[in-house]
Length: 475
Length: 99
Image (cartoon, rainbow over all chains, first blue to last red; front, side, top):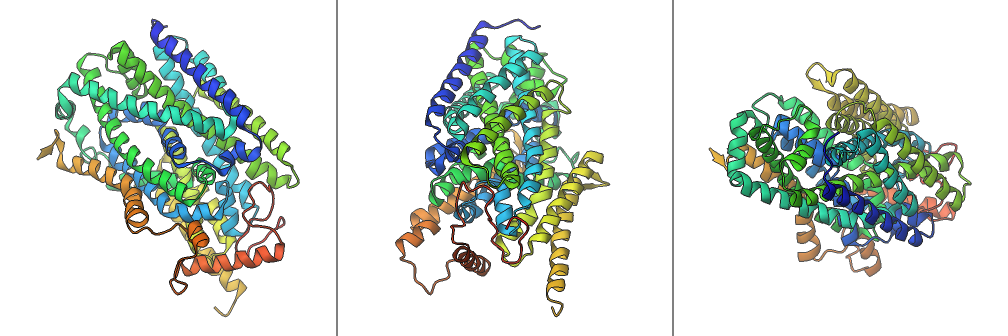
């Protein structure tokens, strides 16, 4: 057990008290299931923007990305972050249409564009799997960090964090989530900039950081790790992360929560600017972390431990406290959003399909029960996670992109597309994408994302041709 | 050649990332701030658009027309938010047991 820093421990406890208080306050403002699910569809631009930023930056971003830069260098920008940013801008260009449909969830959107209500539980099941995996990743990140900081054993700390975020999410739904996100988002961006400023002075400027990082291994500052990653591999990851943004349940829920199309567009546009700068800063901070830890003999074997080690053993306590707040903010803000989204998936997309007569109070009850059950099971799974944070992150990106990207957005803009072809393509893309990813990341040199997306595209086009021919043999 | 201590190609990836994240903002400023184009929901309310000017793609127009027909025939709004289990199908061809 590491030595307990009382300042870090006090900061952590104070932080949990603040977010729980917001949760209690939000509970009093949650009057019906629409408030709980989508903020009564009255979220303004500032709240929506910061909520999106806070949700977007997760433990994957702060712990996983800094760990990834520690090991593989800046190539993370090429295959992951550039894709994420393009995905966000891509979402901007379709958000007006998506918001005008007034759907609440991604399965709602699929049901709308296919005309098949049965698509809701099918898509809901895929999203539930993805969302649950994401919850585990968040909890692993939070547990690793807070254990390193407070000295409390990981298996206990995961339950403390899990309990807090479950509690405030179940109380106020998206009202809790959005208001805690506002606080967490601002804190997070400020603290990461502060951390890089400190490291910049400490290590002799940005140029100094990069030169020292390159001195460790020149491949670390090369866009493709000096060819260690093939262009096909980079393109596969790029596509997976690009597609993730357009297919995530929580993105659709937040779009539904905005009060109009103007707000929906503003929040994505503004968040895109902030996040693209934020991630650039974060990646350079990862380089700085590698330089600082290696240079001071604090090198780590598990890349996920790089950032916690930097905080606890390298940074002074004052800066460390701010960074802890930032990381906690990043983790909890994403975790609560995903937990809320998975609870809503169960109630809205699955339960209500099988119980169409369910009234508002029943849906609220199911949402809350699902939130608690999924939160608890994810916490239990996080005690012995099935992979590192970045590995799980890639897995769900492949799943979402393979299943949904092409069939759903093709259907959004191609009114004549047959819904049955879309549903078959979703199922085919999910099975092939996930299956090949689990086997060996792909077949031969072809990444699983290409296989999944390729399958979905082929199925939807062939399905459309066949169904059209069956419907109208003359064509 | 290096910029800020990293190869130019790496620097360009950083620059491209910031640009990629800002595409939405650039579009918003040009189209909605400078050119003052209204949003789809405001457009309907204001009603200032030239009727001859196409406001949407042919695919969207066809879908909107079908939605309108469907709404008229079912007697309820297709955009109801809380009506769990109600039909949300927009395509005329596809229906199943819950429609």
